[in-house]
Every structure is written in structure tokens, then in C-alpha cells.
Length: 246
Image (cartoon, rainbow, N blue to C red; front, side):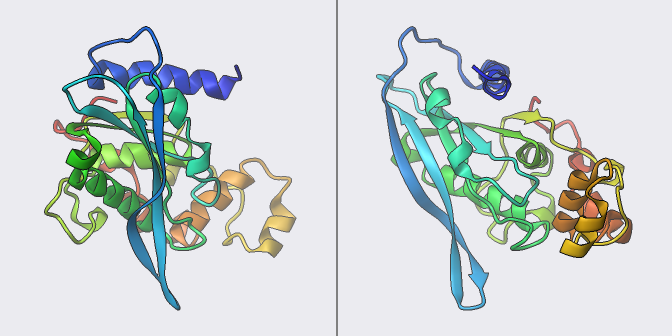
């Protein structure tokens, strides 16, 4: 088992304390529902689809399933729901929703957190159909996915970070954040300019260039030029006594 897999297994234990009260000796079989459309977004010619995969353990229980919403990493600009450890987690008795969201190359922040919150609302709205417990939702992610998980945990009800339809709550009950940034203004600066191919070519030997590139693309400009947007994206900006366990 590699280090990444060990981290994800550790995360199971962390949020299981809050979401699951029983343990099972034998892993259940898992029903996988691929490419469920939870929302759309505008394109020049039509609309794009936002998709998630749902992993449902087949267990004998009268109780609805606790849900882990897995948000993939990749600097907000690569990877997908296909990297989700859905089968591994579902075999431990959770329902797992592996969520895609728009890359920063498609739309700058706050598109990513708006997409994730739409996924939370869709899952809550369809909880009865899939036998999910709407009161036991946890988010788990690494890197950029850790950032979005943390922001999901602290920013419930923050107007600029909520989708238009506020009838269904986007609040969650537990968070696992693996090395996701919580203050974008503290990200090390490798270069000043927006990361065009030319800028990247002359800066790729510098320390932190990859992280600088990811942050600049998320904000649509260098952090120093978008401090307002960087502050809006910071999970630490919204910490209060209503936040779930982390």
C-alpha cells in the first residue's frame, strides 16, 4: 500500500468518529452509480454537465447511510472524480459521492466551491432515493480538494459562496482536509506574472513555481492583484462555533 492510500485510510478513521457508530467485520458489496448529473454550467454553445459518482454499500440496515463527499485534488486544474477511493471507503459502510467540479482553466474562483455546494444540495435533495442520511454528511479531500473540503465546512450560509437556490442546506457535519491550503495569501511567490506558457518556461526552475501557478490560475491573476478574491477563498475567514469537527 502506498503512502497516499495510507493517508486516505487514516482519513476514514478521522471522520468515522463523527459519522459512523458501528463497525462491520466483512466488507459489503458496493453498488456504483457512475456519472450522475448534479448540475450544469454555461458554455458558449450550450451547457456543460457537472457529474458525480455514487458508491453505495449494500448492507442490511434500517438506518440511512452516512455520506462522505470526496473532492479530488490537482491544483484546481487537473485530475477528476476517477481518482476517488470510492470502493475502499464504501466497503467500510459509507456512501461515497466522488465529485467533479470546474477547473480553474474553465472558470476562476468561486466557481469551484459553488459547484461542490451544488453537489451537497443535490445529494441532500435526493437522500431518500439513495437512502442517505442528510444529517451525516462529511467532506474529504487532498490538496485543492482539501481546500474545498475545508471551505465547505466553514462557509455555509456565506452569501458570495452559496449557489442561488438556498432552499436546501449546503452545511456538512465533518471535514477531513489533507494538506489543502487555508490562506491563499500565504502561498509562496515564485514569480509575479500570470502563468502564461512563456512565464512558466522562464520560471520552472524556481522553488514553488507549481503552487504559484495553481493559485494564480484559481484567482485569474497574481494573488497580490486579487487580495479580495484570495481572502474570499480562505477557509479560515469564516471560522465560527457552528463549524463541524475537522
